[in-house]
Length: 88
Image 1 (tube, rainbow, N blue to C red):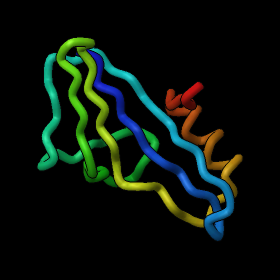
Image 2: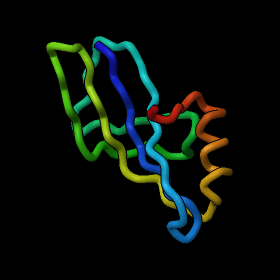
Image 3: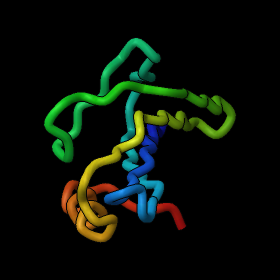
């Protein structure tokens, strides 16, 4: 099953935002009690929502929004350096 991590990043002073994703093939489906770790963050993130589509074999895991004092372009570049991508 494909597990798609989904996060909304928001820029400095809430100027600009972008939805990003990171895709894994996994036999494990996370639950809301799980925390997700990634090399892009210092601390694990909480799951806010999970959508599972068994017919198409994917699971979308929405994470707590990433808001801080970076410009959106700077933050986007950092995430891409950790293999996150944008939605088309």
